[in-house]
Length: 434
Image (cartoon, rainbow, N blue to C red):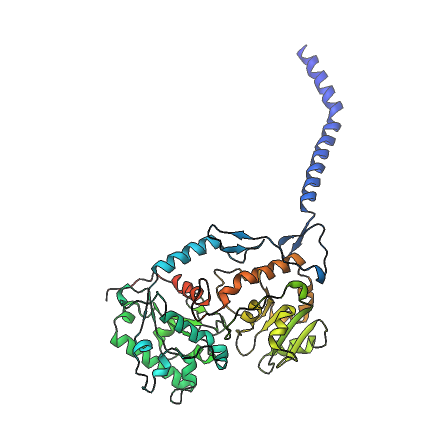
């Protein structure tokens, strides 16, 4: 009887089996349709899914900012729909700890130098840092002024995390006694020897908790005649290039290069930016710039100039969606911060550039990085950027611009505090007793 029941069950299974397979297929198709419904508003670009509004129109007249913002309990603006920070919460907590704890000892030359001494100007803070003539070296001088007036400075060297060597490469370059590259190297080496012989702080760490700041390109070789200064001390520099022999990426710090700017710029909205690209600069010292000019000078969607533009410089940033930073003599220029301050998405064409604040900021969320060899494909690259991605980048510029600004009275999260935070991240070196 049991055998008969088994035969009947087997017979029914044989009859239903095709329908069970069909049922499984129907279920799988249903699942796939649900997934497709969820994903139909996404476009896949460079490994990242970027969401689009189903009814959005792709056109220059519809480029309105995406009003998606997240705020912390304290009201800090954190992000648009795609944050420009790797981890805001982690950074913000660490920043607050730095503000409470960090101490820096400044060698007395920056405070007590005899103003009538031959070399006093090399150490004393600049009396007029917003002088337009300072140009590319503005950040170097503003850091010293901001530090000397900050609560980070301590008169007790034993409690300091870092020690600031306050010489100015820019002032040396224009000094009648120390203007040549070789003389600057000798001066820096001699000063370091004096510090190590007169104070015990240098010898406690071999100079590893000491730092100096510069933006002049000649400063890249300033430490070449003092081995410990080069190998151990931190250089805070605008010329942060992996390609330079005296720059050590894991030790040194990239400094945002900023031109003197007294007032914050009002951002032009995206729909007022009718040009695709803007660039103006000398081409004599850059193969990449020459290629750029040769390839794109006749394209009507590009405003590209060899030398000065035919209209006010800042107008090029205000009316363009993308502004090019192309390597010249150095990997760095102030065009990056100019673009950020004017809401023009920076396009970085500068191989080996160790971007400032890259361990805090996700540069891919507010800029586009292009290899120098891809200049011939530049227009195709920029036109392939989805509208929503561009709008996210534009909105993020409004968030990160405060990190690329100097103020006569330093403000929270400005260039000064962000650079000091980079130092803070390198604290904790082993030190022997004095």
